[in-house]
Length: 279
Image 1 (cartoon, one colour):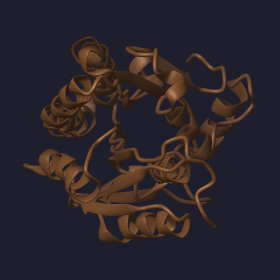
Image 2: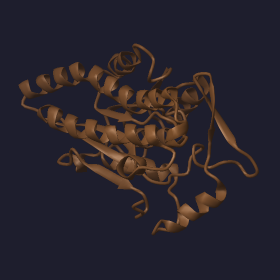
Image 3: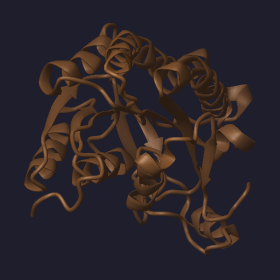
């Protein structure tokens, strides 16, 4: 089917970690509203699948495969938008994963991995994007135009409230909020809205363990456990005023809201997407 709307027509978005889960839903939502999308994943297959899904929508997309923590990735990611689509309008820093343990068992390797993927990588992508955004904003100003661009950084309720077993993840996600508020101040002169979305319980492969067993993911050679105990998951859902965790598509919808023209005077904010839960 063709794209259903043109609200983001002519815009180009880069979405890290968009081969799966919430990231894929973000990429599909932006594409369905007319945006060109640069997709990213660690692995070729999911990245390619997302590109193919966008193309089936009638949209345009390319894939940049690789780790957001790799040297030179940020420049490669940003350049893909400029080289393939001629500009850059939307940046969504979504890539990440969890690697949990209580603080006395938390290793330096865990700490560094979480800070690198959740905080350093978004910083590097935004730093790489600055020359492009500055140049485009100056060109538009010279023509008497004002074009709003969007940055949406993904934080977490762990970053706003902390979470047991997630010292490094929570610290990184709290840092994302500081990065967001600082860039909102620095980039206002370029007409860039910089906001964050802090997710509560969203059902993805990182939260939902398969029945009867522990799930794992492989990240850069490490096999890491994922998933929440089903009983704990049920208890957490029961504490949410809406009575359930959110879907990946619902999470993507929140990000999309901050990419629309209706958000042109919203900047430096953290949108909590948690079904009304505050824990």
